[in-house]
Length: 208
Image (cartoon, rainbow, N blue to C red; front, side, top):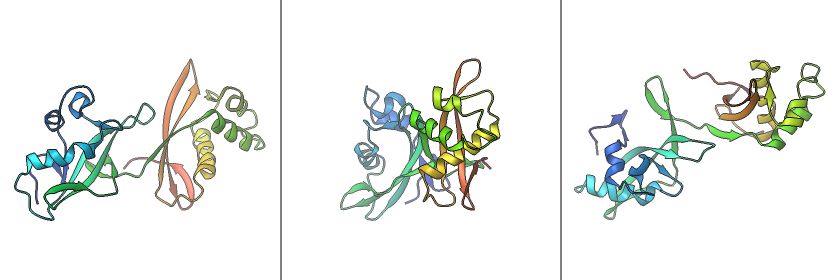
């Protein structure tokens, strides 16, 4: 089946009108034009597809992308799933993909989002305290559970890579982590940096 309308490289992207058609009341997709843990796409998309494509044939398949709110620490991301028409109804595949927008197109994105906890800051501080370049910097991590203005951008990146070696030692090349952390500089600021594993090492990810 080939869809027309909101297609990007054969992927159908739900529009605001699509979400609204599934209900605009509290707890329905059209309220905020997204799905969430309490508004599961699998509870709405099969019926949505049945209405939109009443003449679907056996084994027709459509890849649907949609907005998904993952909570305050994650925010709204783009996810997608393959829906197949079989035995008179639409069903999603077991796996759900997350997407990122790169070079003008939506592509699968394996980024894992993670927010540092107090114990994470302490782990980083205790791991780096014996390294001369960090000895004078780590007390803020251990005592206050944040970075401060004395840290350079490259030092923060390095420390997050050290943490990821501990958090995800078996991660494969190409895996990305978006880590949210606190930095004190004229007040407490929440920042996020994305790292990718390349050639066995964690480095700062720069989108193409």
